[in-house]
Length: 208
Image (cartoon, rainbow, N blue to C red; front, side):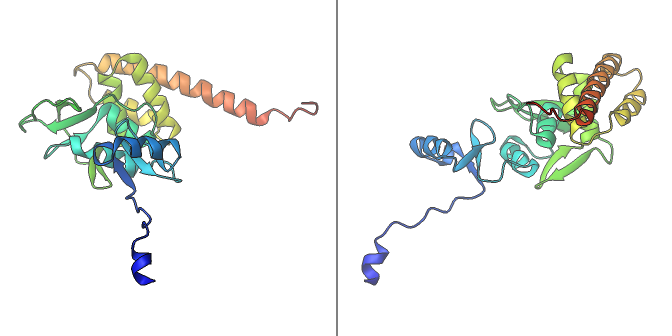
């Protein structure tokens, strides 16, 4: 009996994070279809039922990070909010550090970091929400930047702190444009907040 039982298939135990490159194509598609895996990116998924967390999103992009690299801009915004996944990982390296070789899965740029600009998320270096918002406002296309700033605000970021950060950068590249982007985000965020408050205050319809 013991020998017979040993021939039975054992239950597959998956790690929390599963990469497509480590999985047979048919298995990957089947587990996504059956809800066993929940997509994080096109090539990374997590085992359900818990949805992807900031830790999961940071770990999904860690393979794009070189030594001294930091996830920033749209990638950091996605790690913090889970909305609008980036097409490629945005990797920031400190000024003076050799920029890593280009790769299809990442873009790279130099940056100057303050002592409180970087946080570890699941052991992965990511710009803080405040620094992320500053960079998003300066370097992303305006419409994309506004949407990501509103997302960050919805996850607890005070956009007024971003205004103070931008004011301290007066005269640097794209700061004037960043102020305009931030004001648009503040206006949209305020409008959404007003709508939410009106919806909460509206009495329930007695005759649905």
